[in-house]
Image (cartoon, rainbow, N blue to C red; front, side):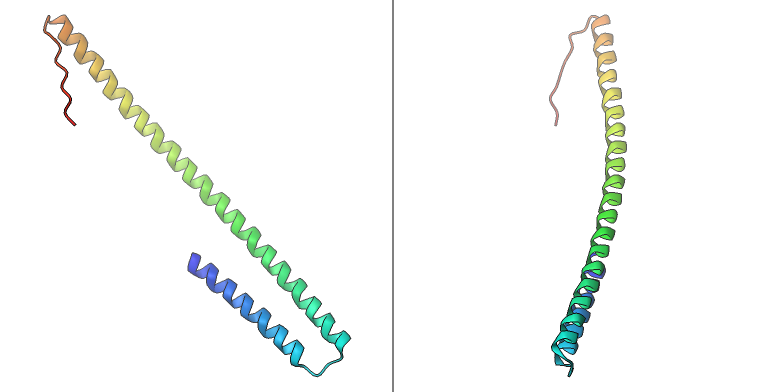
Length: 108
């Protein structure tokens, strides 16, 4: 997606530079040339604002998707950890009920 974005920006910049060069090199009156430059820059500004808005929407959408995925993974991890802890408690209670000395080993 980044390659597409950079290609689009390069294309837009190339079009703007080409249009500006064409206007500056065209045999027109100064007033007409300034008007063309102003129109071209206004059009380029609108295009860039549209592109920025589109990118902002894409980023917001991707952020929401990532947040949802992370929340789901967090819930799965919480569930697994809770089950593991409950298993340890049950095992400890059984050990104590059987009158055995609980052995805790640290195996990583």
